[in-house]
Length: 197
Image 1: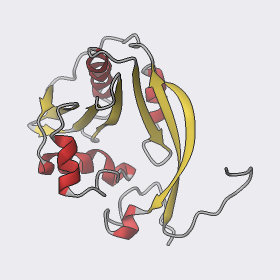
Image 2: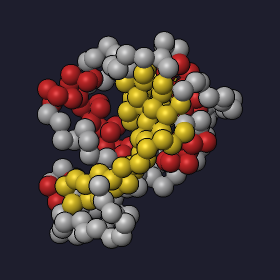
Image 3: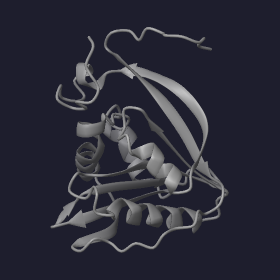
Image 4: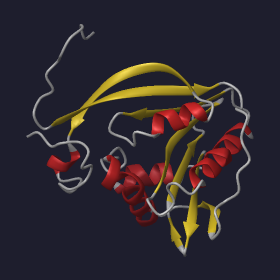
């Protein structure tokens, strides 16, 4: 257990405060229409599709790297699991969002990944996609819908989840190799987090 005060983070590492949130019953939702020219669709993802959308939604701006550490075989196991569902929002023929719902734990759903590219941010598409996530999660026999976010993700993420009906219940510190120094991501990714090597 960490005591009070400052704690050094080794060079080459990232330290993130992770907040875990949950919803124990379907939250009330505010109706919102999809922005004009945007469509929702369920996806049966290929490795190429998933890696492209994952990178454009989260890796470049927010240093998402969890799926980048996986081999094709490891990621393919998730993508092909019938208890994991994938959705996207498309605009002008290009997929610009990632919604990944993981039902592999009996009685639960994890909002594994949720995000939009800059092409959709600020248009109301995020609220529409979250409504779809809540409706889809609670259409199954679950008693808990959960998600986690961290301090290197979008600064709007935590408050968005709370406004969507999730309640924070746990906080952790995660330390990991900086993916820009391991070569997983370019040095220009996540410009809001300085590289210390």
